[in-house]
Length: 633
View 1 (cartoon, rainbow, N blue to C red):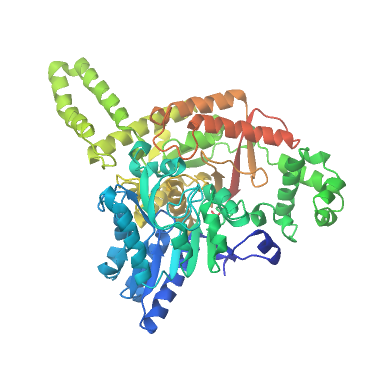
View 2: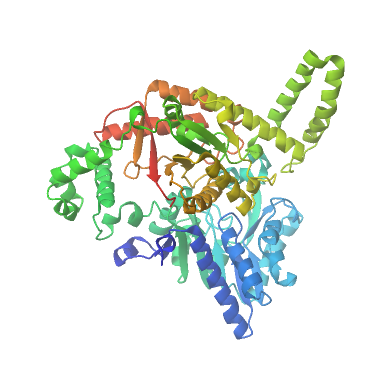
Protein backbone atom coordinates (compact mmCIF):
# COMPACT_ATOMS: atom_id res chain seq x y z
CA UNK A 1 0.00 0.00 0.00
CA UNK A 2 1.38 3.44 -0.93
CA UNK A 3 2.33 5.98 1.69
CA UNK A 4 -0.66 8.17 0.96
CA UNK A 5 -3.07 5.33 1.69
CA UNK A 6 -1.22 3.73 4.57
CA UNK A 7 -3.33 2.67 7.54
CA UNK A 8 -1.70 2.65 10.95
CA UNK A 9 -2.91 0.01 13.41
CA UNK A 10 -2.13 -0.22 17.12
CA UNK A 11 0.76 -1.93 18.83
CA UNK A 12 0.24 -3.98 21.98
CA UNK A 13 1.67 -1.08 24.03
CA UNK A 14 -0.75 1.35 22.41
CA UNK A 15 -3.70 -0.92 23.17
CA UNK A 16 -3.13 -0.40 26.89
CA UNK A 17 -3.76 3.33 26.42
CA UNK A 18 -6.37 3.27 23.67
CA UNK A 19 -9.51 1.66 25.00
CA UNK A 20 -10.92 0.71 21.60
CA UNK A 21 -9.50 0.08 18.11
CA UNK A 22 -8.30 3.17 16.24
CA UNK A 23 -7.28 3.05 12.58
CA UNK A 24 -5.28 6.06 11.38
CA UNK A 25 -5.33 6.95 7.67
CA UNK A 26 -2.85 9.24 5.95
CA UNK A 27 -5.48 10.06 3.35
CA UNK A 28 -9.09 10.93 4.38
CA UNK A 29 -10.29 9.81 0.96
CA UNK A 30 -8.88 6.33 1.60
CA UNK A 31 -10.69 6.30 4.93
CA UNK A 32 -13.95 7.14 3.18
CA UNK A 33 -13.41 4.39 0.60
CA UNK A 34 -12.70 1.81 3.30
CA UNK A 35 -15.84 2.71 5.26
CA UNK A 36 -17.91 2.66 2.06
CA UNK A 37 -16.53 -0.78 1.23
CA UNK A 38 -17.60 -2.09 4.66
CA UNK A 39 -21.09 -0.72 4.04
CA UNK A 40 -21.20 -2.26 0.57
CA UNK A 41 -20.01 -5.64 1.88
CA UNK A 42 -22.76 -5.62 4.49
CA UNK A 43 -25.41 -4.77 1.89
CA UNK A 44 -24.20 -7.51 -0.45
CA UNK A 45 -23.84 -10.13 2.29
CA UNK A 46 -27.40 -9.48 3.47
CA UNK A 47 -28.69 -9.63 -0.11
CA UNK A 48 -27.20 -13.10 -0.62
CA UNK A 49 -29.24 -14.42 2.32
CA UNK A 50 -32.37 -12.45 1.41
CA UNK A 51 -32.16 -10.13 4.41
CA UNK A 52 -32.28 -6.37 4.83
CA UNK A 53 -29.18 -4.36 5.71
CA UNK A 54 -30.03 -1.83 8.41
CA UNK A 55 -27.77 1.22 8.52
CA UNK A 56 -27.45 4.08 10.99
CA UNK A 57 -26.34 7.23 9.21
CA UNK A 58 -24.90 10.61 10.24
CA UNK A 59 -24.75 14.01 8.56
CA UNK A 60 -22.00 16.61 8.50
CA UNK A 61 -18.88 17.07 6.38
CA UNK A 62 -17.06 13.90 7.50
CA UNK A 63 -19.41 11.26 5.98
CA UNK A 64 -19.83 13.05 2.64
CA UNK A 65 -16.84 11.18 1.20
CA UNK A 66 -18.45 7.87 2.21
CA UNK A 67 -21.75 8.82 0.57
CA UNK A 68 -20.04 9.92 -2.63
CA UNK A 69 -18.20 6.61 -2.82
CA UNK A 70 -21.41 4.63 -2.21
CA UNK A 71 -23.11 6.60 -5.00
CA UNK A 72 -20.17 5.86 -7.28
CA UNK A 73 -20.37 2.15 -6.44
CA UNK A 74 -24.09 2.16 -7.19
CA UNK A 75 -23.68 3.95 -10.51
CA UNK A 76 -20.49 2.25 -11.73
CA UNK A 77 -20.48 -1.14 -10.01
CA UNK A 78 -24.19 -1.79 -9.63
CA UNK A 79 -24.33 -1.73 -5.82
CA UNK A 80 -28.00 -2.41 -5.09
CA UNK A 81 -29.73 -0.49 -2.26
CA UNK A 82 -33.13 -2.16 -2.63
CA UNK A 83 -32.50 -4.24 0.51
CA UNK A 84 -31.33 -1.29 2.64
CA UNK A 85 -33.14 0.30 5.59
CA UNK A 86 -31.70 3.48 7.08
CA UNK A 87 -32.12 5.34 10.36
CA UNK A 88 -30.56 8.74 10.69
CA UNK A 89 -29.18 9.92 13.98
CA UNK A 90 -30.84 13.28 14.41
CA UNK A 91 -32.56 16.41 13.14
CA UNK A 92 -32.79 20.01 14.31
CA UNK A 93 -36.01 21.17 15.94
CA UNK A 94 -37.92 22.98 14.63
CA UNK A 95 -36.86 22.27 11.05
CA UNK A 96 -38.83 21.82 7.86
CA UNK A 97 -37.67 18.86 5.74
CA UNK A 98 -36.94 21.05 2.71
CA UNK A 99 -35.02 23.74 4.60
CA UNK A 100 -31.43 24.32 3.50
CA UNK A 101 -30.08 23.10 6.84
CA UNK A 102 -32.44 20.13 7.19
CA UNK A 103 -30.83 16.72 7.59
CA UNK A 104 -33.66 15.32 5.45
CA UNK A 105 -32.46 17.54 2.63
CA UNK A 106 -28.79 16.74 3.35
CA UNK A 107 -29.38 13.00 3.06
CA UNK A 108 -31.53 13.41 -0.03
CA UNK A 109 -28.92 15.48 -1.86
CA UNK A 110 -25.86 13.51 -0.78
CA UNK A 111 -27.17 9.94 -0.95
CA UNK A 112 -30.82 8.97 -1.27
CA UNK A 113 -31.75 10.60 -4.58
CA UNK A 114 -28.67 9.04 -6.20
CA UNK A 115 -29.31 5.38 -5.28
CA UNK A 116 -32.22 2.97 -5.60
CA UNK A 117 -33.30 2.87 -1.96
CA UNK A 118 -37.03 2.48 -1.31
CA UNK A 119 -38.58 5.61 0.21
CA UNK A 120 -40.46 3.55 2.79
CA UNK A 121 -37.12 2.29 4.13
CA UNK A 122 -35.77 5.76 4.94
CA UNK A 123 -36.18 6.98 8.53
CA UNK A 124 -35.10 10.41 9.79
CA UNK A 125 -36.37 12.11 12.95
CA UNK A 126 -38.88 14.82 12.09
CA UNK A 127 -38.29 18.40 13.04
CA UNK A 128 -41.61 19.68 11.67
CA UNK A 129 -44.06 18.14 14.15
CA UNK A 130 -45.91 19.81 17.00
CA UNK A 131 -44.04 19.90 20.30
CA UNK A 132 -46.72 17.84 22.01
CA UNK A 133 -46.14 15.06 19.46
CA UNK A 134 -42.36 14.83 19.97
CA UNK A 135 -42.37 12.23 22.76
CA UNK A 136 -44.70 9.94 20.80
CA UNK A 137 -42.58 10.42 17.67
CA UNK A 138 -39.42 9.46 19.57
CA UNK A 139 -41.07 6.32 20.97
CA UNK A 140 -42.22 5.43 17.46
CA UNK A 141 -38.68 5.91 16.14
CA UNK A 142 -37.33 3.45 18.69
CA UNK A 143 -40.10 0.99 17.79
CA UNK A 144 -39.26 1.27 14.07
CA UNK A 145 -35.63 0.37 14.83
CA UNK A 146 -36.73 -2.70 16.78
CA UNK A 147 -39.20 -3.63 14.04
CA UNK A 148 -36.32 -3.57 11.52
CA UNK A 149 -34.40 -6.00 13.71
CA UNK A 150 -31.97 -3.41 15.09
CA UNK A 151 -29.20 -1.51 13.32
CA UNK A 152 -26.46 -3.64 11.77
CA UNK A 153 -23.89 -0.89 11.20
CA UNK A 154 -23.91 2.59 12.69
CA UNK A 155 -21.72 5.31 11.20
CA UNK A 156 -20.92 8.23 13.48
CA UNK A 157 -19.14 11.54 13.45
CA UNK A 158 -18.00 13.34 16.59
CA UNK A 159 -18.61 16.91 17.66
CA UNK A 160 -16.00 19.15 19.17
CA UNK A 161 -17.72 18.72 22.53
CA UNK A 162 -17.44 14.95 22.17
CA UNK A 163 -21.08 14.40 21.27
CA UNK A 164 -22.32 11.58 19.07
CA UNK A 165 -25.60 12.38 17.42
CA UNK A 166 -26.77 15.33 19.46
CA UNK A 167 -26.02 13.60 22.75
CA UNK A 168 -24.38 16.58 24.38
CA UNK A 169 -22.15 16.50 27.49
CA UNK A 170 -24.25 15.29 30.42
CA UNK A 171 -26.15 12.71 28.38
CA UNK A 172 -26.62 9.35 30.08
CA UNK A 173 -25.43 6.00 28.88
CA UNK A 174 -28.99 4.61 28.69
CA UNK A 175 -30.67 7.57 26.93
CA UNK A 176 -33.03 6.79 24.08
CA UNK A 177 -34.33 8.89 21.17
CA UNK A 178 -35.52 12.19 22.61
CA UNK A 179 -35.61 15.97 22.36
CA UNK A 180 -32.41 17.69 23.57
CA UNK A 181 -31.18 21.24 24.13
CA UNK A 182 -28.08 21.91 22.04
CA UNK A 183 -24.81 22.82 23.72
CA UNK A 184 -23.39 26.30 23.12
CA UNK A 185 -20.30 24.81 21.44
CA UNK A 186 -22.50 22.79 19.07
CA UNK A 187 -24.57 25.82 18.13
CA UNK A 188 -21.46 27.90 17.56
CA UNK A 189 -19.97 25.22 15.32
CA UNK A 190 -23.23 25.03 13.36
CA UNK A 191 -23.41 28.80 12.87
CA UNK A 192 -21.78 28.54 9.44
CA UNK A 193 -24.64 26.43 8.08
CA UNK A 194 -27.20 28.94 9.31
CA UNK A 195 -25.27 32.08 8.30
CA UNK A 196 -25.27 33.29 11.93
CA UNK A 197 -25.37 31.67 15.37
CA UNK A 198 -28.64 33.41 16.22
CA UNK A 199 -30.35 31.40 13.46
CA UNK A 200 -29.26 27.99 14.81
CA UNK A 201 -32.12 26.07 16.47
CA UNK A 202 -31.71 25.59 20.21
CA UNK A 203 -33.11 22.07 20.20
CA UNK A 204 -32.90 18.83 18.24
CA UNK A 205 -34.25 15.29 18.21
CA UNK A 206 -31.53 12.68 18.50
CA UNK A 207 -31.07 8.95 18.83
CA UNK A 208 -29.78 8.31 22.38
CA UNK A 209 -26.47 6.84 23.53
CA UNK A 210 -28.32 3.72 24.64
CA UNK A 211 -29.90 3.36 21.19
CA UNK A 212 -26.49 3.73 19.53
CA UNK A 213 -24.80 1.18 21.80
CA UNK A 214 -27.40 -1.43 20.79
CA UNK A 215 -26.18 -1.34 17.17
CA UNK A 216 -24.31 -4.49 16.20
CA UNK A 217 -21.27 -2.63 14.80
CA UNK A 218 -20.17 1.00 15.06
CA UNK A 219 -17.65 3.06 13.09
CA UNK A 220 -16.85 6.58 14.26
CA UNK A 221 -15.11 8.79 11.69
CA UNK A 222 -13.14 12.00 12.29
CA UNK A 223 -10.99 14.32 10.20
CA UNK A 224 -9.12 17.54 10.93
CA UNK A 225 -6.80 18.85 13.61
CA UNK A 226 -9.65 20.53 15.51
CA UNK A 227 -10.93 17.07 16.46
CA UNK A 228 -7.57 15.95 17.91
CA UNK A 229 -8.17 16.77 21.59
CA UNK A 230 -11.64 15.24 21.72
CA UNK A 231 -10.52 12.06 19.94
CA UNK A 232 -7.84 11.56 22.58
CA UNK A 233 -10.38 12.07 25.38
CA UNK A 234 -12.87 9.67 23.80
CA UNK A 235 -10.23 6.98 23.23
CA UNK A 236 -7.80 7.23 26.15
CA UNK A 237 -9.87 8.47 29.10
CA UNK A 238 -12.40 6.54 31.20
CA UNK A 239 -15.98 6.56 29.85
CA UNK A 240 -17.76 9.61 31.20
CA UNK A 241 -20.83 11.73 30.46
CA UNK A 242 -18.72 14.82 29.70
CA UNK A 243 -17.57 13.14 26.46
CA UNK A 244 -20.45 10.97 25.29
CA UNK A 245 -18.32 9.37 22.56
CA UNK A 246 -16.27 7.77 25.36
CA UNK A 247 -19.23 5.47 26.08
CA UNK A 248 -18.37 3.72 22.81
CA UNK A 249 -15.48 2.05 24.66
CA UNK A 250 -18.10 -0.28 26.14
CA UNK A 251 -19.12 -1.62 22.72
CA UNK A 252 -17.52 -4.89 21.64
CA UNK A 253 -17.53 -4.04 17.93
CA UNK A 254 -16.72 -0.35 17.68
CA UNK A 255 -13.72 1.23 15.93
CA UNK A 256 -12.58 4.78 15.29
CA UNK A 257 -11.49 5.61 11.73
CA UNK A 258 -9.49 8.85 11.80
CA UNK A 259 -7.12 10.78 9.58
CA UNK A 260 -3.67 11.67 10.85
CA UNK A 261 -4.68 15.26 11.61
CA UNK A 262 -7.48 14.22 13.98
CA UNK A 263 -5.21 11.58 15.53
CA UNK A 264 -2.51 14.14 16.30
CA UNK A 265 -3.21 14.28 20.05
CA UNK A 266 -3.23 10.52 20.61
CA UNK A 267 -0.30 9.47 22.76
CA UNK A 268 1.07 7.15 20.08
CA UNK A 269 1.16 10.07 17.62
CA UNK A 270 2.23 12.90 19.90
CA UNK A 271 4.69 11.05 22.14
CA UNK A 272 5.12 7.54 20.68
CA UNK A 273 8.15 6.79 22.88
CA UNK A 274 5.78 6.62 25.85
CA UNK A 275 3.86 3.66 24.46
CA UNK A 276 6.68 1.60 22.96
CA UNK A 277 9.90 1.39 21.02
CA UNK A 278 10.45 3.88 18.22
CA UNK A 279 12.88 4.23 15.36
CA UNK A 280 15.03 7.20 16.35
CA UNK A 281 15.43 8.94 13.02
CA UNK A 282 16.27 12.66 12.91
CA UNK A 283 12.65 13.75 12.83
CA UNK A 284 11.64 11.60 15.81
CA UNK A 285 14.71 12.60 17.82
CA UNK A 286 13.99 16.28 17.23
CA UNK A 287 10.37 15.79 18.28
CA UNK A 288 11.39 13.98 21.48
CA UNK A 289 14.05 16.50 22.50
CA UNK A 290 11.70 19.45 21.99
CA UNK A 291 8.98 17.65 23.96
CA UNK A 292 11.32 16.90 26.85
CA UNK A 293 12.66 20.47 26.97
CA UNK A 294 9.11 21.85 27.10
CA UNK A 295 7.96 19.30 29.67
CA UNK A 296 10.70 20.02 32.21
CA UNK A 297 11.03 23.69 31.21
CA UNK A 298 14.69 23.65 30.24
CA UNK A 299 16.48 25.08 27.18
CA UNK A 300 17.57 22.32 24.83
CA UNK A 301 21.29 22.76 25.56
CA UNK A 302 20.60 22.49 29.32
CA UNK A 303 19.18 18.97 29.05
CA UNK A 304 21.25 16.33 30.84
CA UNK A 305 21.57 12.56 30.59
CA UNK A 306 19.51 12.20 33.77
CA UNK A 307 16.62 14.13 32.22
CA UNK A 308 16.39 11.59 29.40
CA UNK A 309 16.73 8.63 31.78
CA UNK A 310 14.05 9.93 34.14
CA UNK A 311 11.65 9.97 31.20
CA UNK A 312 12.59 6.48 29.94
CA UNK A 313 14.48 7.74 26.89
CA UNK A 314 17.76 5.90 27.45
CA UNK A 315 17.71 4.44 23.95
CA UNK A 316 17.47 7.92 22.38
CA UNK A 317 20.68 9.04 24.11
CA UNK A 318 22.42 5.77 23.31
CA UNK A 319 21.53 6.13 19.63
CA UNK A 320 23.36 9.48 19.53
CA UNK A 321 26.37 8.82 21.75
CA UNK A 322 25.81 11.29 24.56
CA UNK A 323 23.09 13.70 25.67
CA UNK A 324 25.36 16.65 24.78
CA UNK A 325 25.87 15.38 21.23
CA UNK A 326 22.13 14.80 20.82
CA UNK A 327 21.00 18.17 22.16
CA UNK A 328 23.66 20.08 20.22
CA UNK A 329 22.60 18.41 16.98
CA UNK A 330 18.90 19.18 17.53
CA UNK A 331 19.64 22.75 18.63
CA UNK A 332 21.75 23.47 15.55
CA UNK A 333 19.13 21.94 13.24
CA UNK A 334 16.48 24.24 14.68
CA UNK A 335 18.72 27.31 14.70
CA UNK A 336 19.62 26.77 11.05
CA UNK A 337 15.91 26.87 10.18
CA UNK A 338 15.69 30.51 11.20
CA UNK A 339 15.77 32.54 7.99
CA UNK A 340 16.29 36.30 8.02
CA UNK A 341 15.20 38.59 5.20
CA UNK A 342 18.45 38.29 3.15
CA UNK A 343 18.04 34.50 3.12
CA UNK A 344 14.49 34.59 1.72
CA UNK A 345 13.62 34.51 -2.01
CA UNK A 346 14.72 37.54 -4.04
CA UNK A 347 13.42 38.63 -7.45
CA UNK A 348 11.53 35.35 -7.91
CA UNK A 349 8.06 34.54 -9.21
CA UNK A 350 5.85 33.77 -6.20
CA UNK A 351 2.19 32.83 -5.79
CA UNK A 352 0.52 33.11 -2.42
CA UNK A 353 -2.71 31.09 -2.43
CA UNK A 354 -5.27 32.47 0.00
CA UNK A 355 -8.41 30.31 0.42
CA UNK A 356 -10.42 33.30 1.67
CA UNK A 357 -9.68 36.98 1.05
CA UNK A 358 -7.91 37.42 4.40
CA UNK A 359 -5.95 34.21 4.99
CA UNK A 360 -2.90 35.71 3.31
CA UNK A 361 -2.36 38.52 5.80
CA UNK A 362 -3.64 36.57 8.82
CA UNK A 363 -1.39 33.60 8.21
CA UNK A 364 1.68 34.86 6.36
CA UNK A 365 1.54 38.64 6.55
CA UNK A 366 5.13 38.73 7.81
CA UNK A 367 6.34 36.70 4.84
CA UNK A 368 4.35 38.84 2.36
CA UNK A 369 6.09 41.93 3.68
CA UNK A 370 9.55 40.38 3.30
CA UNK A 371 8.77 39.07 -0.19
CA UNK A 372 7.73 42.58 -1.24
CA UNK A 373 10.86 44.11 0.30
CA UNK A 374 13.00 41.56 -1.58
CA UNK A 375 11.40 42.71 -4.86
CA UNK A 376 9.84 39.38 -5.72
CA UNK A 377 7.09 39.27 -8.36
CA UNK A 378 4.25 38.26 -6.05
CA UNK A 379 0.71 37.30 -7.04
CA UNK A 380 -1.77 36.82 -4.20
CA UNK A 381 -4.38 34.40 -5.54
CA UNK A 382 -7.66 34.62 -3.62
CA UNK A 383 -9.29 31.30 -4.36
CA UNK A 384 -12.83 32.04 -3.13
CA UNK A 385 -14.70 35.31 -2.91
CA UNK A 386 -15.65 34.91 0.76
CA UNK A 387 -19.11 36.32 0.10
CA UNK A 388 -20.98 34.05 2.53
CA UNK A 389 -18.96 35.54 5.42
CA UNK A 390 -20.24 39.11 4.92
CA UNK A 391 -23.05 40.45 7.10
CA UNK A 392 -26.07 41.99 5.39
CA UNK A 393 -25.44 45.20 7.37
CA UNK A 394 -22.12 45.60 5.54
CA UNK A 395 -23.94 45.51 2.21
CA UNK A 396 -26.42 48.08 3.47
CA UNK A 397 -23.60 50.35 4.66
CA UNK A 398 -21.90 50.26 1.25
CA UNK A 399 -25.19 50.84 -0.57
CA UNK A 400 -25.93 53.92 1.55
CA UNK A 401 -22.50 55.26 0.62
CA UNK A 402 -23.31 54.60 -3.04
CA UNK A 403 -26.61 56.49 -2.76
CA UNK A 404 -25.04 59.47 -1.02
CA UNK A 405 -22.08 59.69 -3.37
CA UNK A 406 -24.38 59.58 -6.40
CA UNK A 407 -25.31 63.18 -5.70
CA UNK A 408 -21.72 64.27 -6.37
CA UNK A 409 -21.62 63.17 -9.98
CA UNK A 410 -25.22 62.82 -11.06
CA UNK A 411 -27.33 65.18 -9.02
CA UNK A 412 -30.92 64.19 -8.31
CA UNK A 413 -31.11 62.09 -11.48
CA UNK A 414 -27.99 60.17 -10.53
CA UNK A 415 -29.35 59.52 -7.07
CA UNK A 416 -32.63 58.29 -8.53
CA UNK A 417 -30.84 55.88 -10.88
CA UNK A 418 -28.73 54.51 -8.04
CA UNK A 419 -31.78 54.06 -5.80
CA UNK A 420 -33.51 52.11 -8.54
CA UNK A 421 -30.66 49.64 -8.12
CA UNK A 422 -30.21 49.78 -4.34
CA UNK A 423 -33.76 49.91 -2.98
CA UNK A 424 -34.82 46.40 -4.19
CA UNK A 425 -31.70 45.07 -2.45
CA UNK A 426 -32.60 46.86 0.79
CA UNK A 427 -36.10 45.40 0.47
CA UNK A 428 -34.78 41.85 -0.02
CA UNK A 429 -32.52 42.12 3.02
CA UNK A 430 -35.33 43.54 5.15
CA UNK A 431 -37.60 40.58 4.39
CA UNK A 432 -34.88 37.95 4.19
CA UNK A 433 -35.59 34.76 6.14
CA UNK A 434 -32.93 33.15 8.38
CA UNK A 435 -30.59 31.05 6.25
CA UNK A 436 -32.16 32.23 2.97
CA UNK A 437 -29.74 32.27 0.02
CA UNK A 438 -28.82 35.74 -1.20
CA UNK A 439 -29.68 36.83 -4.70
CA UNK A 440 -26.85 36.57 -7.23
CA UNK A 441 -26.61 40.40 -7.11
CA UNK A 442 -26.10 40.47 -3.34
CA UNK A 443 -23.61 37.60 -3.49
CA UNK A 444 -21.57 39.63 -5.97
CA UNK A 445 -21.76 42.77 -3.84
CA UNK A 446 -20.50 40.81 -0.84
CA UNK A 447 -17.67 39.46 -2.98
CA UNK A 448 -16.71 43.01 -4.01
CA UNK A 449 -16.59 44.04 -0.35
CA UNK A 450 -14.13 41.22 0.34
CA UNK A 451 -12.10 42.07 -2.78
CA UNK A 452 -11.64 45.72 -1.86
CA UNK A 453 -10.59 44.72 1.67
CA UNK A 454 -8.08 42.23 0.26
CA UNK A 455 -6.48 44.87 -1.96
CA UNK A 456 -6.25 47.30 0.94
CA UNK A 457 -4.61 44.56 3.04
CA UNK A 458 -1.83 43.72 0.62
CA UNK A 459 -1.15 47.40 -0.03
CA UNK A 460 -0.22 47.68 3.65
CA UNK A 461 2.32 44.90 3.05
CA UNK A 462 3.95 46.77 0.15
CA UNK A 463 2.10 45.07 -2.71
CA UNK A 464 -0.34 46.62 -5.18
CA UNK A 465 -3.80 46.16 -6.66
CA UNK A 466 -2.29 44.51 -9.73
CA UNK A 467 -0.81 41.80 -7.49
CA UNK A 468 -4.26 40.59 -6.37
CA UNK A 469 -5.76 37.78 -8.44
CA UNK A 470 -9.37 36.82 -7.72
CA UNK A 471 -9.83 33.25 -8.94
CA UNK A 472 -13.49 33.02 -7.82
CA UNK A 473 -13.39 29.23 -7.98
CA UNK A 474 -16.64 27.49 -9.02
CA UNK A 475 -16.82 25.03 -6.09
CA UNK A 476 -17.47 27.92 -3.68
CA UNK A 477 -20.17 29.72 -5.66
CA UNK A 478 -23.24 27.93 -4.30
CA UNK A 479 -24.55 30.83 -2.23
CA UNK A 480 -24.54 28.41 0.69
CA UNK A 481 -21.98 27.46 3.32
CA UNK A 482 -22.04 23.92 1.92
CA UNK A 483 -19.84 23.80 -1.15
CA UNK A 484 -19.74 21.70 -4.29
CA UNK A 485 -16.98 19.09 -4.72
CA UNK A 486 -13.71 20.22 -6.29
CA UNK A 487 -14.09 19.75 -10.02
CA UNK A 488 -11.89 19.92 -13.09
CA UNK A 489 -12.88 23.55 -13.64
CA UNK A 490 -11.42 24.45 -10.23
CA UNK A 491 -8.22 22.55 -10.95
CA UNK A 492 -7.87 24.13 -14.40
CA UNK A 493 -8.10 27.66 -12.97
CA UNK A 494 -5.12 26.95 -10.72
CA UNK A 495 -3.22 25.17 -13.49
CA UNK A 496 -3.73 28.16 -15.81
CA UNK A 497 -2.24 30.42 -13.16
CA UNK A 498 0.77 28.10 -12.81
CA UNK A 499 1.32 28.13 -16.57
CA UNK A 500 1.02 31.92 -16.69
CA UNK A 501 3.23 32.71 -13.71
CA UNK A 502 5.73 29.82 -13.85
CA UNK A 503 6.33 30.25 -10.12
CA UNK A 504 9.57 29.54 -8.31
CA UNK A 505 7.75 29.51 -4.97
CA UNK A 506 4.13 28.89 -3.99
CA UNK A 507 2.59 29.49 -0.57
CA UNK A 508 -0.34 27.26 0.40
CA UNK A 509 -2.61 26.97 3.43
CA UNK A 510 -1.55 23.68 4.98
CA UNK A 511 -3.97 23.69 7.90
CA UNK A 512 -7.03 21.45 7.87
CA UNK A 513 -8.97 22.90 10.79
CA UNK A 514 -11.02 25.74 9.34
CA UNK A 515 -14.63 25.20 10.43
CA UNK A 516 -16.14 25.30 6.93
CA UNK A 517 -13.64 22.99 5.16
CA UNK A 518 -12.75 25.52 2.46
CA UNK A 519 -9.02 25.34 3.21
CA UNK A 520 -9.04 21.57 2.69
CA UNK A 521 -10.86 21.92 -0.63
CA UNK A 522 -8.52 24.65 -1.86
CA UNK A 523 -5.55 22.52 -0.85
CA UNK A 524 -6.97 19.64 -2.92
CA UNK A 525 -7.40 21.85 -5.99
CA UNK A 526 -3.84 23.20 -5.73
CA UNK A 527 -2.38 19.74 -5.19
CA UNK A 528 -4.11 18.31 -8.24
CA UNK A 529 -3.12 21.29 -10.38
CA UNK A 530 0.49 21.13 -9.18
CA UNK A 531 0.72 17.44 -10.04
CA UNK A 532 -0.40 18.24 -13.59
CA UNK A 533 1.91 21.24 -13.84
CA UNK A 534 4.97 19.31 -12.64
CA UNK A 535 4.35 16.61 -15.25
CA UNK A 536 4.65 19.09 -18.11
CA UNK A 537 7.85 19.00 -20.13
CA UNK A 538 10.46 21.61 -19.28
CA UNK A 539 8.75 22.74 -16.08
CA UNK A 540 10.82 23.52 -13.01
CA UNK A 541 9.05 22.34 -9.87
CA UNK A 542 8.26 25.27 -7.57
CA UNK A 543 9.12 25.06 -3.88
CA UNK A 544 5.94 24.73 -1.83
CA UNK A 545 5.70 26.67 1.45
CA UNK A 546 2.87 25.41 3.66
CA UNK A 547 1.55 27.91 6.16
CA UNK A 548 -1.02 27.49 8.92
CA UNK A 549 -4.23 29.48 9.19
CA UNK A 550 -6.01 31.24 12.04
CA UNK A 551 -6.34 28.12 14.17
CA UNK A 552 -2.86 26.65 14.69
CA UNK A 553 0.80 27.31 14.08
CA UNK A 554 3.27 24.65 12.95
CA UNK A 555 4.83 22.82 15.87
CA UNK A 556 8.47 23.82 16.35
CA UNK A 557 9.78 20.34 15.65
CA UNK A 558 7.84 20.13 12.36
CA UNK A 559 8.67 23.54 10.89
CA UNK A 560 11.36 23.84 8.21
CA UNK A 561 11.50 27.65 8.23
CA UNK A 562 11.12 30.17 11.05
CA UNK A 563 10.65 33.80 9.96
CA UNK A 564 11.66 36.26 12.72
CA UNK A 565 9.39 39.29 13.08
CA UNK A 566 10.08 42.57 14.86
CA UNK A 567 7.41 44.48 16.75
CA UNK A 568 7.11 46.75 13.69
CA UNK A 569 6.66 43.70 11.42
CA UNK A 570 3.84 42.41 13.59
CA UNK A 571 2.19 45.83 13.79
CA UNK A 572 2.25 46.04 9.98
CA UNK A 573 0.68 42.58 9.75
CA UNK A 574 -2.08 43.55 12.19
CA UNK A 575 -2.73 46.77 10.24
CA UNK A 576 -3.24 44.64 7.12
CA UNK A 577 -5.69 42.35 8.96
CA UNK A 578 -7.59 45.45 10.15
CA UNK A 579 -8.32 46.30 6.51
CA UNK A 580 -10.71 43.35 6.43
CA UNK A 581 -13.41 45.36 8.14
CA UNK A 582 -16.23 42.93 7.38
CA UNK A 583 -14.38 40.28 9.40
CA UNK A 584 -13.42 42.52 12.31
CA UNK A 585 -15.08 42.87 15.73
CA UNK A 586 -17.57 40.09 14.97
CA UNK A 587 -16.76 37.70 12.13
CA UNK A 588 -19.67 35.76 10.69
CA UNK A 589 -17.80 32.44 10.98
CA UNK A 590 -15.26 32.80 13.80
CA UNK A 591 -14.99 29.07 14.47
CA UNK A 592 -14.56 27.93 18.06
CA UNK A 593 -12.21 30.77 19.04
CA UNK A 594 -13.78 33.92 20.48
CA UNK A 595 -10.72 36.06 19.71
CA UNK A 596 -10.69 38.28 16.65
CA UNK A 597 -8.48 37.15 13.79
CA UNK A 598 -5.86 39.84 14.45
CA UNK A 599 -5.68 38.69 18.07
CA UNK A 600 -5.20 35.08 17.03
CA UNK A 601 -2.42 36.08 14.62
CA UNK A 602 -0.70 38.22 17.25
CA UNK A 603 -0.95 35.57 19.97
CA UNK A 604 0.21 32.80 17.64
CA UNK A 605 3.23 34.71 16.33
CA UNK A 606 4.29 36.07 19.72
CA UNK A 607 3.66 32.68 21.31
CA UNK A 608 5.88 30.89 18.79
CA UNK A 609 8.72 33.33 19.47
CA UNK A 610 8.39 32.74 23.21
CA UNK A 611 8.45 28.97 22.71
CA UNK A 612 11.63 29.30 20.66
CA UNK A 613 13.18 31.52 23.32
CA UNK A 614 12.32 28.99 26.06
CA UNK A 615 14.18 26.32 24.08
CA UNK A 616 17.29 28.51 24.04
CA UNK A 617 16.95 29.63 20.43
CA UNK A 618 17.52 33.30 19.47
CA UNK A 619 14.92 35.61 20.99
CA UNK A 620 12.52 37.47 18.68
CA UNK A 621 9.44 39.58 19.27
CA UNK A 622 7.33 37.29 17.04
CA UNK A 623 7.76 34.62 14.37
CA UNK A 624 5.95 32.73 11.61
CA UNK A 625 6.61 29.08 10.75
CA UNK A 626 6.49 27.18 7.44
CA UNK A 627 6.93 23.65 6.14
CA UNK A 628 8.54 23.34 2.71
CA UNK A 629 8.35 20.60 0.08
CA UNK A 630 8.42 20.12 -3.70
CA UNK A 631 5.36 17.88 -3.79
CA UNK A 632 2.36 18.53 -1.58
CA UNK A 633 1.70 15.71 0.91
